[in-house]
Image (cartoon, rainbow, N blue to C red; front, side, top):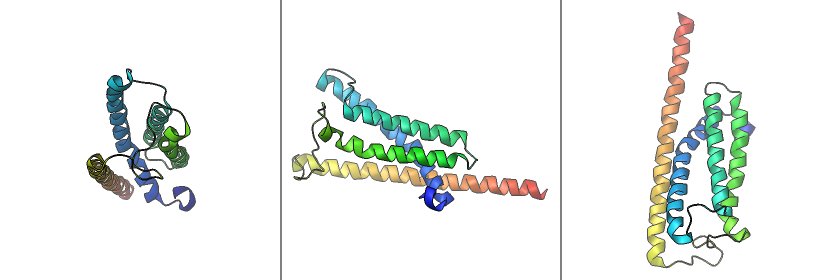
Length: 165
């Protein structure tokens, strides 16, 4: 959206997402590795899903570095937008990697063409917890956006006071 309309709120919102998303990504990689050791006998395998998820972590790191480097400068917004598009392209690769390539991971169990393949006793708590994690993620992002708007307002008002003096 920012590339088309150049609306600064879009880039402000987008810049707050990686800070939260990287925490969720790291937690997922660590807990997945801890689960993988007793299941597969190793903490890490260069599996399609694991590798594409690691690439997502690097994309988030890149977005954070671009954001920190060009914190109060509009010249980094374009780079940030292009790297965000690359990260967005990686999302379906993560989702469908188990279907496209022969991996250690099982094929999709919940969102698939034949309907869920897991029992309702597991599906219902999984969906409830997924909704809870999504709402937590949304709350944290909205809180960060709120703080960023106030930070921008404070900087703008501080600069305005300096000009008036």
